[in-house]
Image (cartoon, rainbow, N blue to C red; front, side, top):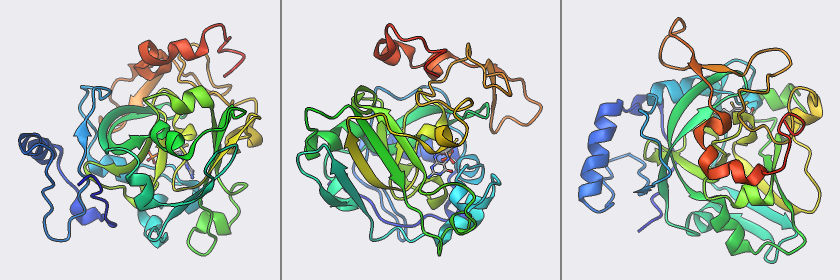
Length: 306
Ligand code: MTE
């Protein structure tokens, strides 16, 4: 049974990392069997060779320091306000250059591939970083199921935008819906994940429930949250940040310590959870995933294609 998704995770469910590690070991011993306690949403997922060995941030950190402008500009706004978002029922419209367009329910999507646990480094363009244990399925599994038409070259994503549930949408903080895009080869890359869970449980709303993108070698803004539309296209899609500040945020947004943001250095990063005065660590090109993804950009000037 690979569909272990249920809704709901509150602050009260915060799992200390050690407890979670023990549970992972137990689950590994049980061959991936779900250990669902009363009222607990569990996602059954197998470990992945793509996971980093680095210790994940606490659930507390990951769910209380967020960028989700649909709920406001402050890092704590999503944790305070995202509970207003209705995430069940949920469907994703898949359209454009695709063989089987349509509205796909979340349960359908979760059935497209076995869920995996992927512990990824996550680097925000604002020069902070975390390590996050996602649960999800490769975006490629969904694209294979819906059938990419030969003319498609890019994939565009749009997030949900509901003024009645999202105060930042009502206040028109940005030009909604939040939009992002990937080149088709980036979208098909095995690291590119549709995340539906965090720490083995359903994705908290502030992290983009019920389904979001995670592209670990790119700055975090590429990883659109609460996705409702995926469009296959032959033209490079315009993303929200690129449309607002094209000199500051490019389409590619690969993590790159050699290319500074016009207003700050990208050479190092602050690890969330280590205290504000902890030493910064050097940023690694492609966020450390270069051996897997550098080939996608062979022959490209990444200072021009930032
Ligand atoms: N997706 C939507 N829909 N709205 C947003 O404001 N912020 C982006 C990205 N995806 C954002 C979004 C940015 S800037 C970052 S760094 C990550 O989400 C933050 O993800 P996290 O809060 O789960 O760490």
